[in-house]
Amino acid sequence: MLAGLAVGLLVPGSGGADPAQQANALRGKQATLTARSHAALLSLYSLDTQLARARARLSALQAQAATLRAQQLLAKREQAIAQDAWRKTAAALGNHLRAIYEQGEPDAISIVLGASSVDDAMTRLDAIERTARVDRQTVAQARAAQQTLARLRNELELRAQRVAGLEAQAVQTATVLVQARAQRVAYLASLGRQRTLNAHEIARLQASAKRITARSQTIAPPTLPSAVPSASPATAISGEQQLTVSATGYALGGTTATGMPVGWGVVAVDPSVIPLGTRMSIPGYGEGVAADTGSAVQGASIDLWFPTLAEAMAWGRRTVTITLH
Image 1: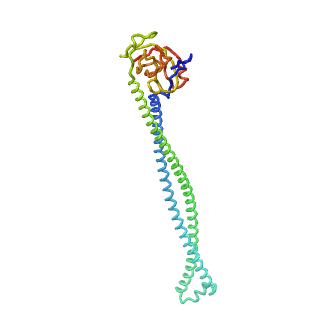
Image 2: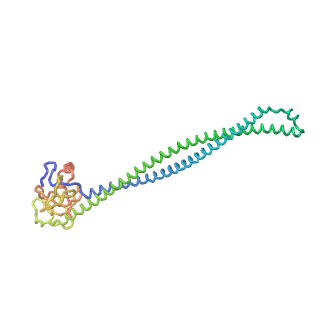
């Protein structure tokens, strides 16, 4: 592995962040998606309640409109009957007046003189008066009924118009709620698909992290020499040991000397100082595993992988005391 110039630019590189860290980040997104799904579901319940109310109101208005239509039809029929009765009464009254005109209108003196008795005279006079009164009352009643029914029809028409307007508003409200509900259902389905994809990706990353761990554990560490120049090596990694090293950051892709893909936690070491497969804790970096080598990594020095060049340069080269375990 080539050492970086003064800023710590080095070799073996990277194929992405640590799978375990990526899985943790996705779990955070999964929790956010779950919270959004819960909120969207509550919103859907609210829309369902509003839609049920809107449909109930629409049904009531439709029933009211049907009742008004029936009442209008009945009023129309009754008005037609009243008009027919008025026409017939008027015709009968006209015929009666015509007969009186043709026969000559009888006066009270003629009736009295022509009567056989006083009672007969009174009866005839009462009959004439009663007939005239009944004719006038019949015409007046027919006309009043016609006018009353006309007013009723007007009132029913106004009520029908108001109900029709409310019915149109109810239809529009129900339509808007149905559209909003469909959008909310689609949003929930979209969140569900995202959660499913995240779950699959988390499972994949966990499996990848397990494979890396298993592979690092199968690397056979070579036997260390009794002494290494310019370093204080750990001759055997039994229990925890500490070692002060020069740590340099790098950010390149590819695979390591052991065949592992580069990634977060992959550490290039000098196997004569730190055996391959050794796990270590690095202050400021985290956990790592000795899984790579390089020509520039000699003695008490290590190279640490970073996902970006900016992060590697920010680390640079620094002296740290690592714990081998």
